[in-house]
Image 1 (tube, rainbow, N blue to C red):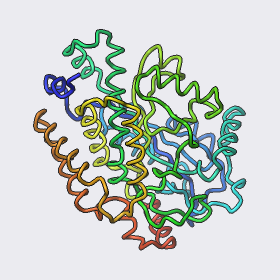
Image 2: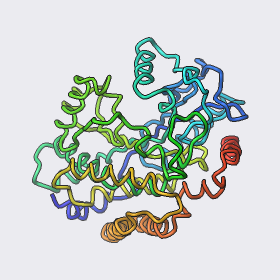
Image 3: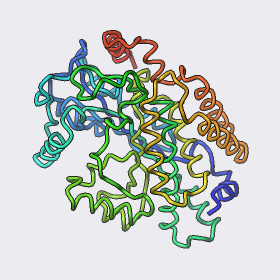
Image 4: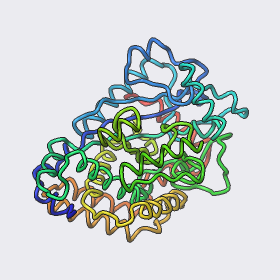
Length: 409
């Protein structure tokens, strides 16, 4: 399929509202001195705020917005929810980084979230397989779906696929395949887990890096798991096989950086098709009180459009495997170093600029300029900024984290 021609024919529908966005932000509750909170999350607060949940640990909150008309609206929704949660947990704060603060020497003292019996049993299983410390990593998830009007326009313009659900699946798989190949660029720009605090469970011989969370020791499944994105059927089949073989205890244990979503289980996903993509890659931005800035959300928006614009890979799984290797390499690069993938990144920025010019979208051109500037100047990336402001000192890092956590919203 000629994606560029298809998008050019529907350029009027390509704009800041082309993606509907929902956000999920995880974070650890802490006391004002930086230790994990010792309290339970108040049931009354959970009942009052439908968007407030607990993740693995009792201290780990998850803030979930509704689906919004665009990325900017999703950011506003997360800001308001964050304000309400912070007010409800005061004087406790939310730790602003993806890596947790100092953890107990005995990981059994990390409290599993106090949920129903089945949910607790699931988390206890995770603790046995991965360790409680690794489950304390937090992140920012973007749930993105193509605007229904855009999907309809694209479907009606092409003739290769006659079923609208098949076409929708084709669009989302195409985006996912390219996203998983080029995701290293977002790790370069916005990775911000360059070091850890005591008792994290990470090996500390690597020095300062861009994103431990995106590296081989990060929030990943155990080695040997392979999930195919070649088709929706292969995706569902490979997950079901992994559960049957005991590689996963449940489908929700799959920690892939893109999940194909639609319904509550794989059976529904097969029947109704892909409704949206869950992008699970971003580290929290500690300088944003909500863990992400509007600039970042605009970059994700136009990066997604670029993934749709680019050609489809001939061998999707090999393409994704190459992307996995690139992402893990970039994650472990020194924060102030020029990335090994500089030239590829500059070509991506140039292609995004061409997209913006072809579709008359100056916002895409602005994002392309931003990406190119930060590829040339690694000091402008989040990880490099964190390392500069903390000088590699855990003490200074703790002081900065507490200062950022205590800011007014």
